[in-house]
Amino acid sequence: MDVFHIEGPVRLSGSVRINGSKNASLPVMAATILAGGKSVLSAVPHLSDISVCSELLVELGCEVSREQNGDLCIDSSVIDNPVGDYEIVRRMRASICILGPLLARCGRAEVSMPGGCAIGYRPIDIHIRGLRELGAEIHIKNGYIIAEARNGLRGREIFMGGPFGSTVLGTANVLMAATLAKGKTIIESAACEPEIADLANCLNKMGAKITGIGSPRLVIEGVRQLNPVEFKVIPDRIEAGTFMVAAAITAGQLHLNNCQLDDMMAVVDKLRGIGITIEPDGDGCVVAGDGRLKPADITTQPYPGFPTDLQAQFMALLSLAEGNSIIIEKIFPDRFMHVAELSRMAANLRKEGPTIIVAGVKKLMAAPVMASDLRASAALVLAGLAAEGTTTINRVYHIDRGYEKIEERLNPVGAKIVRESV
Ligand code: EPZ
Image 1 (spheres, rainbow, N blue to C red):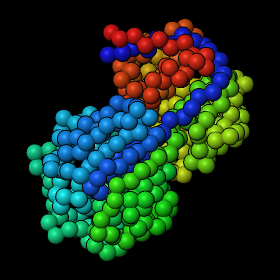
Image 2: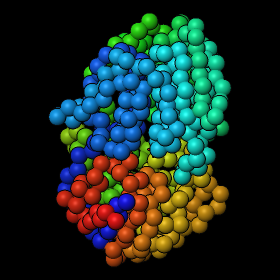
Image 3: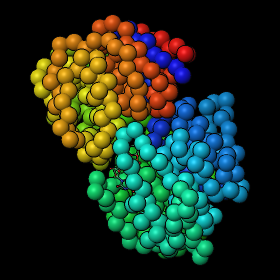
Image 4: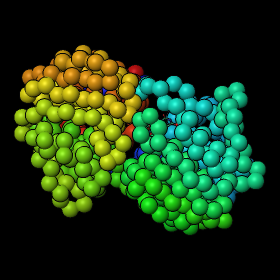
């Protein structure tokens, strides 16, 4: 298991290129199941979650390889084992998004129920409800979701809202299944996240007929078959947001290339309110801070609201603001594993249910801390850049799930991060 030693405080300065989006790549990889033949995906990042997804596709019968230019080739001509094994699904919850495409392609699927998760209880009832509405028979046996649609799927009007709003991967699952269903499907209260729009654009390129992309009402005219595709995934808005906070928390200046500000309005708005300058530039932007941070109130919401995947990183930032901030988590009310760790670094945080009151402090102090989930770990890296002394982060494999060699990208712009294998 690797450990990070981060020496701080530092001031970051320079350029960073934002990679392709992990959370767009995973459903797009699953979408290749829908068509026989070889698809070529570009800008898919080199991350452990992507490797797990590749492993999953290979188990189903696909051939998966990386070209020298980095493109990911998926040949899904043969799918002879429509089973998402527990050993793989337990390593990555997003594996669930093979359920819809397998069902549509093979007429049946067995996928392990995802288990517990560091960010809290994450049911999949809406995925199952949506697929049942399309005519699938679904039951749970020995920890597996057994789904069958012997006579194919039928288009329907489906409402997909839940207690916390829309569901990203639930929308992906039902959307993918509906592309091959007979007749018209309407998904109401669909997730509007850019990653879902990217998936829909990819599916249309494969021959699907989807309208309403980017809106909460997706209309899908079922087609008989889809074709393999060449597709480039969008830049990672969560990675971009994390690097923006890195510039802000170090009073630095970063030029972020390959960054779509249009997908990040809520984040950019908050950062500007905190006192950070963000100017569009080329295919990205320049982000700069002067060390003075104003407090902010943040509520996480489905897109286009403020993303839960940047909540932890903003908590690290607001720990150093001049005054009190409030952070309310409305997507995953228990997503607060980073609170205790940031407190070990002298952040002043008080938890009241799904709300954290952040009383700004003048300095963060280095400490040994534990990475728990992906974004919580990113928050610890950011805190480590600003804290005085050497912060040691254990279990950095959590960071590697979503940030490609983060130390090799931060060190050239002024960070002092050493990875040690222990
Ligand atoms: C996606 O997870 C992302 N994962 C998560 O990113 C992200 O935090 C989340 O969306 C919210 O934006 C991927 O894209 C791979 P949801 P997903 O279904 O789709 C409730 C990261 O760090 N819900 O949109 O699984 C659920 O409990 C990861 O990169 C139901 O009640 O999340 C939550 O409160 C972590 N029933 C809310 O909906 C369901 O059937 C939104 O969850 C499904 C969800």
